[in-house]
Image (tube, rainbow, N blue to C red; front, top):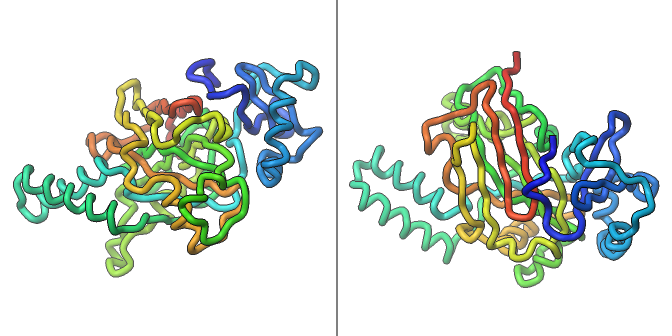
Length: 321
């Protein structure tokens, strides 16, 4: 169930909720939720006319009339149904340096000092001359921020990857980085779960990774609880990302560690696909995945996750059986 703290930044946020009947779009103000279903069909429909709705939402949040619910009485669903989900890989400097250095030690026989120095040099060159790595995720993998995560039958190394996700607020193609932030409606939390031992295909080594199988199992993308308008979040390049696994802090990093910032991610993604309102763009996961700790998800585990100003997730892990 939702917890009162940490709460969303700003006077209100948006989400999708259920009181046991049909899901409805809601305006969240602290511990209360205003049902918006009489005004708009969904949060995505609202975002599709974001410039018109944003000032109206300010008015509705301040209005005590209307159909208000207690947040604690509602089931919190994924806040928005995205058109497409774009995911950024290898986008946190410390995380990638750790991975590259470990490979240089184990595969190439470098000393720890040599391996880390080479990895840091590679990252400096990538920041200067490289481009982001982006792939697609399936909307069918989405689940709510307090739903159970169901481990698939295949694979053993089920891992977490907590990420800042942004929601696009207006259509655009070939968006200049200097204009990219004006395309962001708001932010939410996504945990891009991954089955590590299903990531590479030994039968198809020339093709390499199998993103579909490793990352798109049902419930493998807990998202929410809220869509927090960008105006309330402050600098998205200076937010804290924290994940606890069974109470132990595993990820605790600032978004300052991103290799490619949000404007560069949006600009790069929009060279290939037209971004549309409601699209979700995940910005990468910092260091501290289960593979780093040698610990993976098992039935009964509890994942707690939060990002500054965006709220809190709690997911209990269970077996497919």
